[in-house]
Each structure stands twice: as C-alpha cells, then as structure tokens.
Image (cartoon, rainbow, N blue to C red; front, side, top):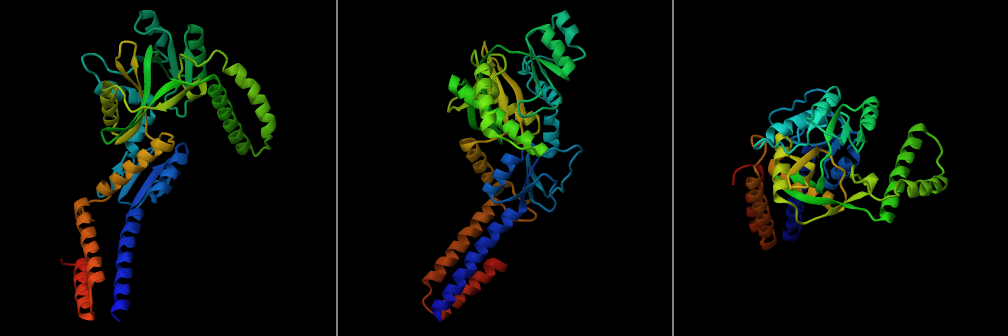
Amino acid sequence: MVTSMKYFLKKKLKKIFKWGLDMNKKDVYIYYSAATDITGKKLQAALGIQGGNKKPEGKKLVIGWGAKTKDVTKFPKSVKVINHPNAIMTNRDKFEAMGVMATALNVEGSTHIPKYVTTDKVKQEIFDGNISLPLIGRKKFHQGGKGFWSCPTMAQLEDAITAGAHHFIHMLPIKEEYRLHVFDGVVIHAVKKVKRSDKEFEKAFIDDELARQKILVEKNNDQFDEATAMLMLNRQAKNATEGGANMLLRSNRLGWKFAIVKKYPKGLADVAIKAVKALGLDFGAVDCCLDNINVPYIFEVNSGPGLEATSFDKYVEAFKLAIDNKKTSTTVTASFSEKNTMKKQLAELQEMVDKSEDSDELAKVREIGAKLIFGGQ
C-alpha cells in the first residue's frame, strides 16, 4: 500500500513539473518573417516554443526575429516583447536607422556613422566637397547582401542611380571589420572578417550561385540538372574569383568570411551596444569596423541575422535566460525568484515522499503537497 501510494505521488510530482514546462513553452512565441524564417524556425525548435510570421495572440512573451510589419504593432501591456516589431520596422529602413544612430552616437562631432547622402543630392555634395568618391550606393530597404553598388567613379555612380540606389555612403578606409552580436547590452559573440583562400573563395562562389539557381528553379517549377550547372559554375568561379578578395566590398560572395574571435576592440563594442539601444532593440548583430586611424564606425544592425553553430548556440542560451527572467507579467505569474523557491519546495516534497515509511507519513506529505500546490505554504 505504501509503495503504491509513493509511486502515485512521485508520478503526480513529475506531471506537475512537466505541466509547468509545457505552460512556459506555450506562453512564448518567436515572430519572424519570410526573409528570416530559416533561422527563426531553427530557434523555435531549439527553444521548444511556438512561432510564425503572423502576429501572435494570447502570448506572454514575444521574441521579434526580423519580423516584417507595415503598420505599428500593439500588444497588451502584460505582454513582454524582446525586439519589438516597431523597433525592427524602424531598423528595416536603413536610411532612417542611420539617422537615428548618428544622432545617438554623436560624440564631439563624430557620429560613428559613415557620411551619407540621398541620391537627389549626391552630385551636388560631391561638387561642393562635402563627400567624395568612392561611394557605395544602397537601397532604402535591403537584406542578405543585396541592394549594393560599388561606385569608385562617377560613371558607376550614374549606373547605381539608374538601377535604383536610394542613397550613397562614403567608403571608409577599413582597417578591421567585425560583426558583434549584442544581447541586452552585452556582446555575446564576435566574428571578424578575414580573406578567404583561393579555394575557399571559389567554393563560396559556387555554393552561393548553386543555392540561387535552385531557388529560382523551384519558384518557376522548372527541372534542374545539378551536374551540368556545376560544370558551368566551376568555369565561372575561376573568372569571378580571379584577383582575390574584393577590397571595396567585403562580402561573403566577394572573397571574405567571418572568423570567430575572443578579443575585439572595446571602443568598437561600446559603440555597437549604444547603436542597438538607440534603435530600441534588445539584441542585434552589428556590422562595424575600425578605420585606418582606429575610429569605430557602425554600418548597420541586423535584427534577424543568419546564425551558424556557435552563434546559434549563443542566442539559444541568451533566449533561455531571457525567457526565465522576462517571460510574463508579475501580475499573472511568479517572478523568477519565486519560481526557484517553488522548484525547491517541490524537490523537498519529493524527498519527503521517498523517506516516508508508512501510510500516516504519506498522508501527511500529501496534505503538505496539497497546500503547496493549491494554496498556502
């Protein structure tokens, strides 16, 4: 009798623990877009939470992962939001985001943002000597390394204007370039741009082009001969990568890669953290650099970056901590410290079940358990 009652109580306690965990998962939602859903879905699975590209309802914590919205998004006051969609919407407009960051980062006349000018004024600004070639043309909204034009001469600048560039940015003399992943005011992961070897460059070009072709074929519902495509791409890669990495545009496609680093310039990290905060974001991958005289500059902040291996694990760890601390309103559920107290009490209750020697003791434990779970201490 005692053994069967012990078994029953222990099973009940396990159910209580599992119920609490399931409730936590159901309360949390990761809100991504079609452009950020690959990593968004992976994070959703790793965290064991719900997610999608539509605004969630009835959640206690919402994580914005590059969510794409056209209008202002509102949530009830009881809902905690990490990277609010409204902040992401501001950041998606790269021109507006530069203005926000330039204002917030202005220290003694240095904004830590490269000089920039809109397309309608660029020629006059060059003529007046306020900005100079080379420039980079950019669209107002862009992602995934698209919407860039390298403009070392006026002829290329004219082509970029015709192609739809919204604004132009002064091309800095870069000494070192980084991507710093900032979460809640702390750099949780850092990578530095380094040149690829010739073989790495060719492979990166082929992999990128092959992926593009597969997406195009799938969209058009066409047939795809990968073997033939590889023959063509191997030839193209030799020509495209000749001369080594592009020194003007340091992208994955143009001969560069990210390498994990443990050390990075503190001054650059400080500016990156301020940039994320200025945009109203809780986290972001900050593309930044030191120029040839070690002045920190911010290029942009990514609110839904692609993640691999170590960087992915770092975000999973950070989100788990954030979920424990920020998941719900204190008016609805227990605080983090209260949760720990209850977990400890339940563990002690299970120990009491194990040590009970007769029916009377088990009945007493059941009474204590009922008060703990359903009210009272």
